[in-house]
Image (cartoon, rainbow, N blue to C red; front, side, top):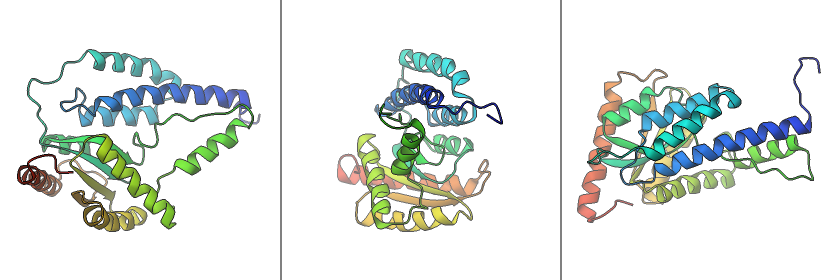
Length: 243
């Protein structure tokens, strides 16, 4: 009332309905990344995701619908340009230059699990009629939150199982754990997860720490190139997909 914001249950439900429509579009676009030769690039998806967080939902929805329709009609490249598919996991990643570096290494981001990414941030919120909408929204985010600030063993295992499921569902060959320098929570998560995902889950995993501004990072490109080569070698030796 003081700031002119309608926080009634009806208004919150209407906002959630808009959010769910946006999420449905992102789920359809994400499904396109499962293809062997996808029609959307990692950079394009990253920018769409960032815009969806920065722009009011009502304003961005028409453009997302238009983009989704364009992607349905888009033809893939005649020859698949990607050397390997990976899942990117980590902290805040609001610089799409990171995705450009991966693209230049011909590394395809099949799925993402980082702050301000599509999973779990772009999943619909189910609402029931017999409870206040705000309480249900809060419960949903507490239950689905994948932040490493949740330090219980149950939550840690849940995060690792989610990453494993993304690798399988999106047909990825490996995992890239990234963190901005001095992000202590993700630094702890990344250090342990790289070892666990490699040794216990058997999934090739690379961990990197990065600068806040990543454009022009030659060292980052070199490490990703080396990771791509290791995935290719593993595929050749195994006679099939490396997972």
